Image (cartoon, rainbow, N blue to C red; front, side, top):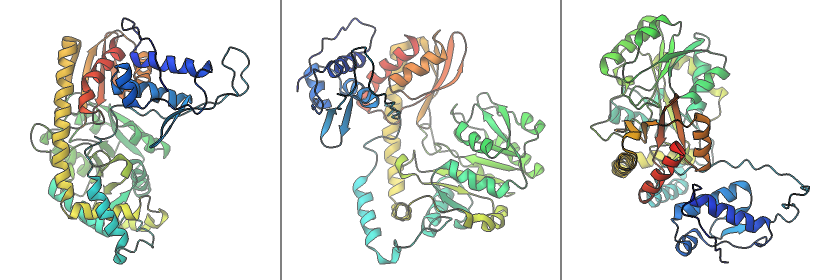
Length: 454
């Protein structure tokens, strides 16, 4: 099947939207019949002289709205909408589509994961009778994996822990639910950085904790505000603050540990994106500095390895172990036993260290390309605030466009953007770049400019 739209290169409307509207009209008018196959992204890109990203954006929007469907290894096909009336008359039936957006800049680099090594280890695990894959998981997580995680945190993050303190689970929010079950009898108020990680805050809200916000600016964490509050628990990301990307200096870390000791409090350290740094070595964890058993440490393999793996971990202080042992049988292990054992072997055989070196090279190139394009295309309209670590950058743009329109246009363009603050003529935002193909960064940057300024 051939599609032959006429594009208006002078129009303010993005090319992907022009292509999307053309195909949509062809379908609703009946010119494109049900089950007709559309050209592949590569074929359409070549025929129409458009980038593959532009074609993919148009196709993805059509999939999201239910006009076409993507069948893996077969291609894109027109959906059967014959029972619907698109000529302005009464619609016979109404269907709402709530497909999640697949963002261009989310996830991890497609070429970063060593699938062949993972498959080999996977086959070894399921073939080895000693792995007992026919039995259920340990509620706390497989001992083999917990040992490797403890060794990893001690070696790579300057930690001080044992496998007995490690709890494995599918995501940070799940693990926070377990932590709350441990501490809820002794604590009912928790402090969060503002801006900070809202999804963690939501968990504590759901468990009826009182929430206190500590407003931060740059790396100057206001420990005085924390002391004045009634919170005895704080959730914090000192090695790579989310979303600002700042690093808490050692003097503030020591003050924070002193606060926890004197308050008999708990520090929940989210070690977010801490392993990816482009200007020096990763900053050692707060957990490793803790001499008074006050720090709960949270880590994840989602950004480090694969989001779809869904393996995270929590390291609790030794003083919380008795309480955890009382309640741990209430919880069923939420991650696959096989995946845990594959990951443990992956780490034990040294593949994780090699993988970290690889992704640091990959993301450094993407980081450099994105920041260079932002400076080149927008000059003083965009200021880069933070870009030397992690998988997102923080910028400030001079724009009069309001927040709601920026967010809406970003979603329509499949750009994942986090608005940190907005006033009448400036917006501060964080922007993931991990999922963008290196070759598409310039085109992505142009699209970002339209989201922010048009």
